[in-house]
Length: 238
Image (cartoon, rainbow, N blue to C red; front, side, top):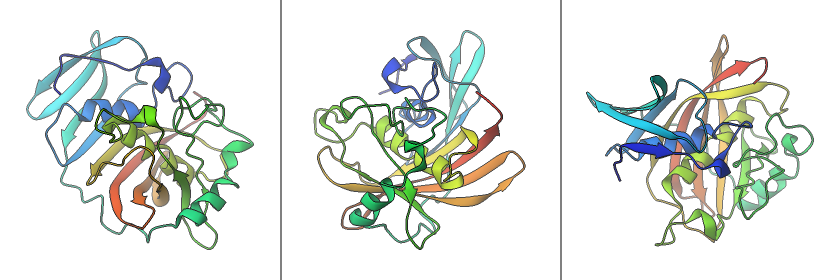
């Protein structure tokens, strides 16, 4: 649904006081009719305030007063290319048990990966390393609250699910502080609440302060439902 204003509910924070980047990007992406959408964050997306939506030349922008917060455009990037083999449900459950964020987390109340969120209002995607592979993974059974009336998980929440596992893929120890700069997503099949999925993430290199990752959402039987590529920015503090 296209709108002239966008408000990110306070429930969907990432760092304290600002939105989870994937969720904010997913909300803005809904303003475009495109199979694959790229969203670039230009500033931390604020919570519970109206952002003005502007459209021009195929790009949709979200602004707070005159400050550009994020912009979205259709992308021809094939985010499904070279997705690693699916992680099994049991492997993902085991990986979550060694998730570094359970011991040390820069943003412990993040709606997607924060251990201080409860199942009633957080995704609790605990992406730990998969034994014998350069991949992190989390088991995910979306709660009822994540779904729209038809039972499918809201698109912005699927974007959020494809966000944080990428951060843990490039930072499995949790020692770095990274924030999302750009997220490109394609959802082939929307996930449904109450069903089992595995979200995986893998590193794709770095360039200075920029780090790159891929993420994927598979069903428990290994079917690819969605995929993403992300650019992260290393910061000293936030």
